[in-house]
Image (cartoon, rainbow, N blue to C red; front, side, top):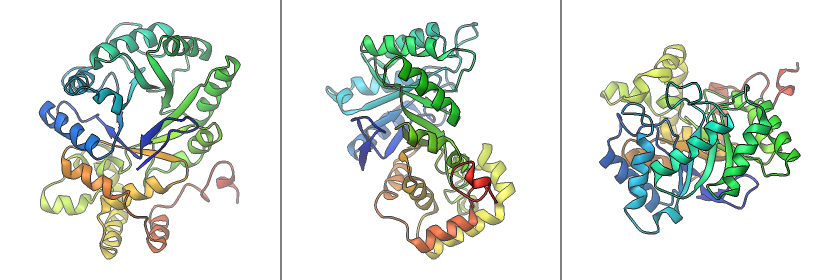
Length: 327
């Protein structure tokens, strides 16, 4: 249920509670109940971003989390709180990116919204190649020294971005990145080429977002037949379904043959992959959350995983680049 975050001594749950659906899809009373339910079941890693809640207004989700943390004495100490910086919070020239000015200002604003004195994992939401690493690390080191941030992570970085960030941190004799958060699932296996190898080589924990590819791997066809498809009926899941209908149909049939929920299979596959620390889930109901927890209960049989590789083959010959491209 819990493991260490990369090369650090910090212990986190193998499922991270993602909050991207708060505000617009999950109302505040439902969000508070879901966070209670997650914490009661051992999920201690809570992932958000300063821009989340944009359907209401940017920063809304951090405020909801702050009110939840304040409801019970000692709750903050039980949670590993992760948020992100980098996406624009306003229309100003310096309201986004990874300049020292924005990193420090955004952190202080997040702390106010969250109602806490520190952020456990402060993640750069996207790479900002217009800002030199020495400037980024100067700002992050300041926040760590001040006690406002415990660890620094990345999100949506390329493999060479991770290597560049770590090289710059080593020059400053600091810890550098401790985690990378990337998209990875049966449908999107590009992270296997360079991101996952880079993360493992540099001792980073890997947090996986969209482990069910926006609901595509969560039994979308069965949900469409019953009229219960919500997230899987829109966005990249809907587009991917048009392109992969026959594959998804075969996937759901395969899961049924093994008596398993497609959502459980997709989640369990991701969690079983080498280097993966946690899967970030964005449940809208208690049932969604409990279903994700079932993915931790038993490993998938080899007869199933081999068929999954046939249905959703890795890129090229499989494995990391450049070997995967060699004939």
